[in-house]
Image (cartoon, rainbow, N blue to C red; front, side):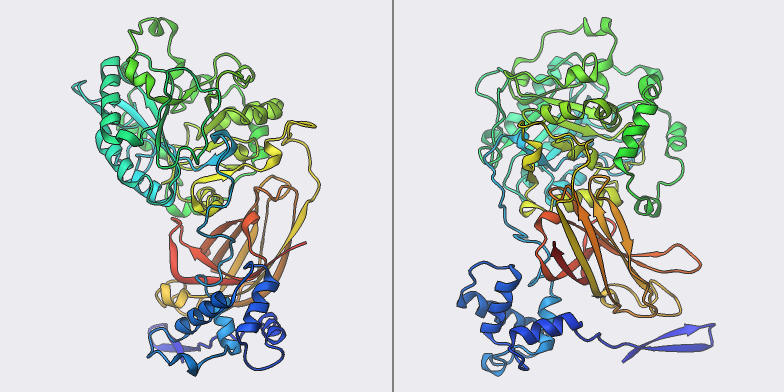
Length: 605
């Protein structure tokens, strides 16, 4: 069996394709638990499962079910053999089991919520979208409910909508204001949110509203929201501020609204409207997929230092998309009466900083609230007020959003928010690339429910509040071994990676986290092989393992051009299962390949 490639239109090159044999570590494991014999029975499989810690209190019925699943997988597509014909596992069967992502995944509790969900919302990182209605860039793409649906199907729990009057001022559109984005109706977005809110998670969906409406349209919003959501809409029994947020468990199956207190809609002036030519200029270079996925996620410590150095940059020259609190004082005084029903429906009251950023971080024990900062504002205040940010996020919600210059819908390093306790690190879910891969990976934790309980160190007040600026000692070391890969020959065309020969794959493995932990390493490239065997091991000392992510990427080496992309995944270190595991890979957009996977081993020391 082999593959043939044409060369120079005349010659043909034939490459032999052989399945790689089980790695030596797999052979040793099999021999150990099979008692040195050629077959492994139920007792041997149970011993293996107990030893690797992947299962707890495995009973006979569970072992038998797993044996049956292994047999079914082995004979998929062929006539099923009688159960007694294969009562035992051979080495190849055991290897196939280890290399099955369905039977031997890398994460504990892959589809189970296992965090304590009874604490206030401020105790959780929440899967958050930014401008959730946009299909592409921030300046000229279409607005639609489709990206909202996709986000909810992925488990996103916070959806952002920007509300503007339509052209006749009698209805509400959703669009990115003062740009060329084409609108979608509010009612269409609300109906889609209701339909898809809980398909991926039963925990609450929060709709953050950017309000640019006059009071009469605010009343219309209130009626729409009540009609669409009915009993699943949660709002406080009275109009007073919440002293403490409810828990995700209390809010299961509910939808909440979060916005700033209503104010008068101020029409955009003609000179604020962006022309189409300007949009083209602003988009510039690097908007294609290759530029997005190829760009490495910047170290957030560098961003903090850069923000301090250029803290005067944005004051008059950069438009953040959430900066509508900065209207002129005389315009604010024109505000008419506030729509009372609309105001009553707001559960999480939001605002932007008034005065200094340090003042905005002062916590009111009588009022739990949400504060929004741009990534640049956070970087600026984190330099001198890191502990105040952490303290603020213990009772209140902090939302971080992309800076206004990210017109291509790119994203930032999310750890700048997470390490300071920010619950809502808002991302452009259509901004595919390495930063978004981190977001996808982070929220694989806790069964993918969209809520990840913050580690204890971010909630402690004694003996002192956690300071992200202080160096931490190494708590544990993660050892990762990359054995082999397979599946590309099923998921890609023969000439996808190379016109004249099989691919030359290599793997990049590393950690995303605090700067001291973040690093990337890589294996050697294996030439001309659809089923590469690397057998390389890497060690990663971790100072903050609680929020660290394991990054895995496969690329195909190309001598003359840019290396080709062969798959990626990001996994929360805190949920890795020690032992040899099958690791499925995903495409650039975060969709799982049908067959592409790696065989890897994880150990903690």
